Length: 143
Image 1: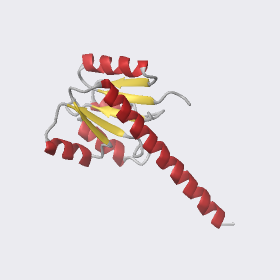
Image 2: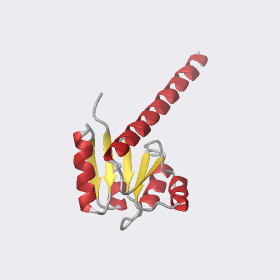
Image 3: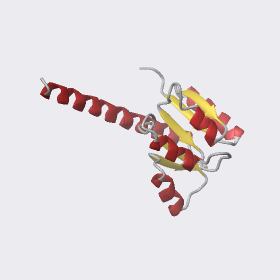
Image 4: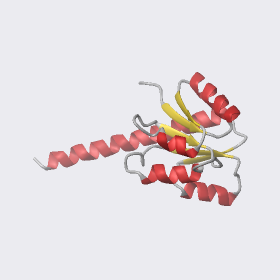
């Protein structure tokens, strides 16, 4: 299996470098973006296996980028993790309502982020496998 491809978007360059370096060491292929618009632009041509978005970014917020990713049929199945300093219960509810598959607050533990990414990537892969199996079953009924 190839290394999971993860897009990390954060406007804090120190955090971006830290996450990128640590996830690379853990076997991820990392793509980086400095704001929400760059993250959206990086969704093509080769979509990542997961996306990690900071909430408060210039141009397009992480929450808005998440809504756009989840609203596009071509990228809707890509898991999104919001990684943010916004930690109130209403922030978490709003972040998950934007379509995020997971929510992690800063400061964070890289091991927790790694485990969360592996989990959402595995769940997304299982859903794709289930959908393919369902299509195969439908095809059997046509004959």
